[in-house]
Length: 248
Length: 314
Ligand SMILES: Cc1cc2nc3c(=O)[nH]c(=O)nc-3n(C[C@H](O)[C@H](O)[C@H](O)COP(=O)(O)OP(=O)(O)OC[C@H]3O[C@@H](n4cnc5c(N)ncnc54)[C@H](O)[C@@H]3O)c2cc1C
Ligand SMILES: Nc1ncnc2c1ncn2[C@@H]1O[C@H](COP(=O)(O)O)[C@@H](O)[C@H]1O
Image (cartoon, rainbow over all chains, first blue to last red; front, side, top):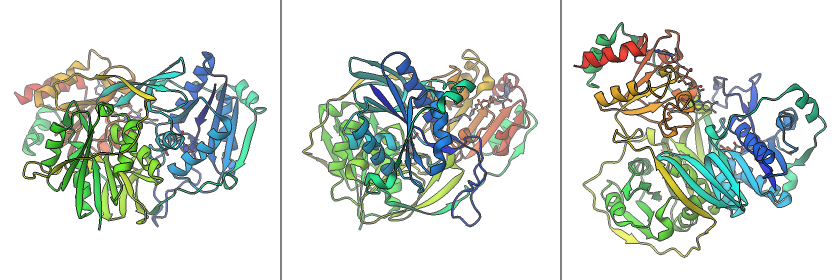
């Protein structure tokens, strides 16, 4: 079985993002970029499934600009067998990303696709669900545990009410939640090895995809700031302050 | 004119208050009609609750055994079908809505808006990105149905009681897949207030130190009638179950009072509490970033302060 993994590059989660004063976007110049944390988790899960013998091949997919190569090499250094780079200069909305994955699925025929539950830049949380719909296959989102046997995946999902378990027939789309696993660190020799692993480069324009970008972002603004409050000196003062506001 | 279909969220035969929040957002569009769609096995009690929400024009029900559990693969085709004739489909931005709405949108061939926090016009909305560090204005194309999830913390629940909307059974001609099956739901059994709708929340972080120590948080929460939440670090360390996580990738909440105890205040945590009325921080590190957003801050050891707070409450 092949596993396709979404491997998006995003602004690193430690960066405190700034909105440009003219409201046309956020400042990304000189800002640290990293793999979407959920995609590292997705990749780790795929690698573990390969190590267990459930899968033979793990393919990382990045949709983005020409300079994505170094990022994809990180995925290869972590252990993916190969990478697919769909080249586009445009930022992509989830529906178009899902249509892109669908094209790759037609070609690669994977038994499983693992994406992150959300990309921490757009915070959309959509691509996996959309892909599953377009592919007409099951989805198991927000996964915190995955077991695969007999052509089925049994997936525990982190939902608001607690932990839900569902069973889905393969092929299927799984999206990773934070507690699915702890991604491994990349070791130096693996970086060397990754240099010889193949990266297929596909021009987005050659896929003949209808853009699903029906949403236009017209303005960016900084969020309203909460003002710094007061420091109280002890428990009694805190209780008095909260009582005065009618909160206790 | 706009016509909005709101998808009801429910559990154990009860309507979730997230539905009334999505109705509030729908009302802000000033539509001609707001219909609520109830997909369930037993629809009656849920539909009766939905019919009472102010502003609801009609409640549409689809009672099918397959709808017993909220499986997106099963619900999405029904939503896509039922969406016919509507200008907007609104779903609460809870794990339920986040799971099902994109699937329904893709079946309709349209993009989806996530986490709508304000309505600026029939096709103009605001939503947060980058863990709430930027707010974008998004325009949707009027020629397409708008499928959106509604950020529940941004909207009050529409009032309930005065309305008595008609309830109509809907027959949808869709074949449902059998490739996805519900196995079980392990609910965090608790008689404490629900984290997502509670007016007071007491959260503990890594500073609490252990699962056993977390009792001190539960005890204090019970004393003031609060729900209990946690940071990711506390959940990861196994102090409490995952459904208590507050933040970018946990629950986004807006209680009147939020108390962060032994929580440093990482941006991913803060994005979950931005809309809280009053934030209280208790942390032994006076430099902790949580104090930058706290209305009331108290520097000290939580194991000393919590008993003192309880004593001060009498
Ligand atoms: C993709 C991604 C998503 C994330 N999503 C979330 C999310 O949804 N929610 C979330 O919370 N985090 C999330 N995080 C994690 C986040 O970045 C922080 O790591 C986390 O919030 C830290 O939790 P904490 O404040 O409990 O722990 P720490 O940062 O370790 O802080 C513990 C605090 O406790 C204090 N303390 C220790 N002992 C005591 C004592 N005896 N008395 C008083 N104070 C004490 C310390 O001074 C310290 O400030 C996410 C991270 C990533 C990368
Ligand atoms: N441009 C992209 N390149 C690679 N993977 C992507 C891309 N966009 C979305 N994905 C995948 O889809 C997941 C969810 O993204 P989103 O729906 O944007 O929150 C991400 O975690 C990735 O796994």
